[in-house]
Length: 551
Image (tube, rainbow, N blue to C red; front, side):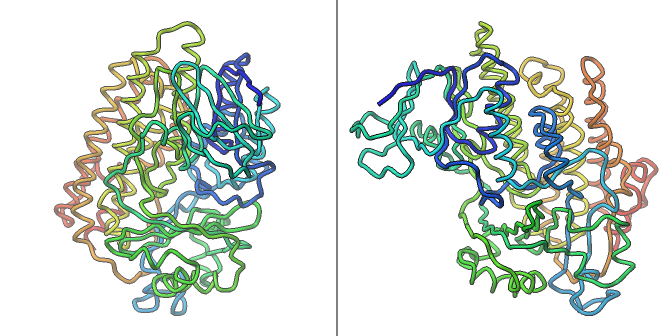
């Protein structure tokens, strides 16, 4: 049995763990970092993981913080935004230009051209193999084929590892039992220990940090061979021309109905990722637990997709009950932390998973860097934990109790407008302008965030009421183009401005004031859809919403 000493050990060699190792080495080139991974590399393409669609924070972290922009541009797919379809399962019953069942008869919410700030669809296997290559080139020690047998976090961190195929006694993640030596067993000692081992999370289990939250959803996900091109779901040239020469299949396409949504994400390796996320109040989890049950569910709720899946090879399948979860603590001044799904997970809608990996890893890097430089990090650790908790709980509010409205554009058009505006006004620019860690000690900036948080909570309460009273209906072939919403175009474009110092605070303050006005306009519009739109409302959101909500 050998003992190795490192400055920091990471359990888990996926996106969160390898990404953190590379981020730490870029910040602290002399830091001795080791990663322990149960599996062996190279990871297969079409790796069975969620988190293939990125939005602006996660994309910025991958492209700029980790320096992967060349890989994303050359080896992954540029994303054509999020795209929602409503009433696709009711097509043929109302209106439409094409034949019965064509997608042009559904209502569609998305963009006609890409927003300025780039995002990508990522094949996780391909991405993690590239992260491994770059981490090792940066000097990270990556130990493959090992699993954690037990660990301790008092004082010096000790991680006992055995070969991944070892099935002997004493396999607990904590305690000192089961100490029988086996061939290949290794002990890693370090000052810092980070758990990035996804839901297996040995540190979370050891410290009893697992917590449930109040957002109860279930999900399954699977991949099929080949590209599912939703552009081919209608032959109507007018419908196809609504997005110019940019194909819809490059979007994260989402088929929606009351209590559920289905994602379609293209992968550069030539497969399509599919997943169903459903509220158990509307859809029995037993109908999503097997490929056969899922196919029957699709035939009932999304028959066009069911026909596509039936013709293709299903490459994998997984399901999970109570998909969303919490964590009792994420960062500790005693030299441990959690990141990725080992810590918290919200909901796949809007793809926040990589965002929260990016923020957690940035906070961990900040704490480790400051401690290496001799700072007392106790106060800062508490501050960053509080900020991270606030971001998590506020983001969770955009999902809780809202699944009932997912089948209705009358609900989702105002909801996505608010959610995008909130995200691009405060949340995303704080990261893309490298100011997320400033929230720990910049009172003025933190106060602006708190104001935005309060606005968001109020808006989500109003949307929750709308979700309960807005029925789904058959699609009518309408296209709600988010590129015609002036505020969204302006906010997305500014994410690349790179402001700092007083200019950053001034812009965030202006954005929050604009959010307050937008909140008032949307609240009044939802209360009285027929009210005349004023100049400020039209300058912000154009003509789409007054027409939609008055319909």
